[in-house]
Structures are given as C-alpha cells and as structure tokens.
Length: 175
Image (cartoon, rainbow, N blue to C red):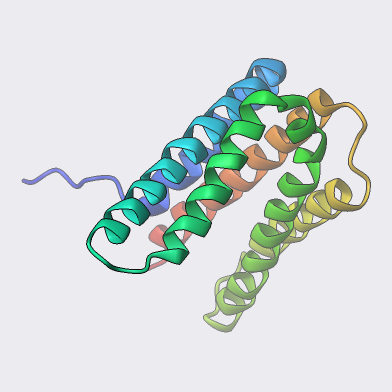
C-alpha cells in the first residue's frame, strides 16, 4: 500500500502552529531574524531585477519596470538591514492586516460549510471572527512594544493554525 504524502491542507496549519510557537517563545530573536530575512531577501531580489534591467539594456530592450522594481526592492532591503527598529515599529500594523485578511477569508468558508450541512461550521466561524478581531486590534491599536506585538501575533497564528488543522481533520472525517 502506497503511503500518502501530506497535503498542503495539513502542512500550512502545522507551519502556522510552529511559527506561532517560535514567535511566542522567542519574540525578540524572531523580530530581528524577520528584519534580516526581509532585508536580505529584498536586496537579493532587487539586485536580480537590476541585473535583468542591465541585460535588457545591453540587448537594446527597455526594461524600465525591472529598473523600478529593482531599485525599490534593493532600497527596501538596505533600509531593513540598516534600520530594523523602524521596520519593527510598523510591523504590528502589517501583521494585524495579515490576520484581518486571514480571518475575513475564513468567514465565507464557514458559511459554505454551513450550506453543505457541516454541523460544526460555527467552530470555523468562531475562529475566523477571533482571528479577524485580533487583526483589527493590531491594526487600530498597535502596541508600543514590538515584543508584545510579536507574541500577540504568535498567539494569533497559533489559533489560526489550530483552527485550520481542526477544520481539515473534521472535513476529512465527514467526507
């Protein structure tokens, strides 16, 4: 009998849970690593676009879009690496926006589950609303302490991951 490979439906919630726990347990280190990853990734991706622009210019092509994207991403990367505190000060807003979108995207899924007759559709709705409310709190009242915001986001990811995992198990059980 062939062994089934894990599906994305199970891997993504597990990743949320693991990332949530890391953010809860090591918030300061997670914040710094986040800035380094975003900075290095943006810089490398920006340099890649600048290289594409240079190649296009050598072959007589335009490539202005490559130039604009390359400059913006390289500048963002340098900024993240040079001024991580500034990035971390606006991080709660962006993390809150991500949570708000995640929660809002789960509401239609919960309603769809209700229309298909799932008896526990309300659990998904509850998790969706809690996730969205947590996102709203971060967007409209970002904590002055980045460390606390990172922990708060970690808890939110943990809740989101657990809800997704529970829903995946229930959906698989009732098929």
